[in-house]
Image (cartoon, rainbow over all chains, first blue to last red; front, side):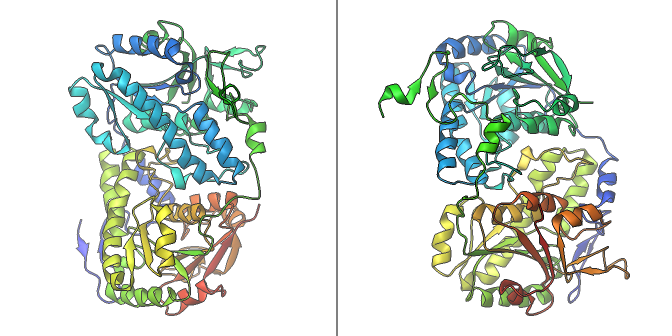
Length: 276
Length: 279
């Protein structure tokens, strides 16, 4: 590869196969498909601790879950992501009332998961719990070498760059999305959502107990069902369809002792959503 | 409000009593209820312009210096926010990274560095005219710079970093500089968005390689996506997002190598190609 010095209005260029193609061009995609993707941290298990479903329940739900995570620390490398919960909903409600656009809601959505992550870090500090933010990912290998348990706020760093939805103003990418994208880029071993329901039902079990439990389903099939409510942000399903590494997620009920351990061991204890 | 009204328990969770209390934010009816035509624009008087890395900066002084003069001159009549993109070095690092098997999120993490370099140079060229580097999301400082007649500048690529969603085909991030600048303008609720490139605007194919390519002066994002052209001067993700935008209902692509086009575009004259929302 070489540099071509441009005279006058000519570009100073670098000769690469990309030189004359635009990134939206099919050639660029073809070029990308020639090499297989590498996994950055393939032995890490990414787990999300729900905001409304776990954190807002306080010690009765949180403490046993942390005990179970600590008990698994020697056997499994883990990265914890944390959701927001009712305070995020409160901030969204006020912001919606004030006429705030999606991008501002996405920015407000960051702060509450940070609070939750800070609380978890304090609770887990004696077991190596450390708070990491978006810039700390390159240090993860060190943290694992030191036996740390990294905890991150689940919200992706989109904020002002969160795209508007066709209808409504709730940001599409919230903590479920951020946690899955983390698992995808790391090429993680697993991606598990610790919530307070067994998994996915055809209705929201909090408001309609007559729904049917779905133990395992393809992401496309679930999208096609067009359910009025979902246990996970729909954008996770759309992204799953294009996953290069993290092609399966499991949603489990973390309030039942043993479920987290079994999920970490690769057992099917909740709902598995997958893509080919 | 008493504490009793603010907080509620009873299902094992502590809720704050709001319209979204205990809600699944996924429920379609709830999502629809948040729609409004009354969204607040942050700096609706600001106009966002993007300087192309490959199309302008890589061409060196003969392309950059006259354009810098035009931007400085335009600042007298308009509140401007300037974005800068990457260019040849970005393509090069993506090529190496793809060859190494780096995932999409890893590629996205690399993009900003090339833009930072181009921004550093442009900021130096315009510093005497009040150009300042606005760090990523410090949009809350923009009113201060604009009120003082300065020229705030930023890199364009969105800060999705490791969280860049997997591409629908291949591994090149779909959310590049064009999309980042579009979202910057949308988040600001800006008055206009102008992409400064090195072609007169949009053609039916790349005019550099196909002399039969026809110029398109005005087209809707919807129609443009349906045409599925072999080469596009702007990222497809911008067209998709434009369709859902609340504030940026159209964007303009102009030739920054032709003198006077920037002033005309900022004045709202028909110049270059205008792509608009059609829902």
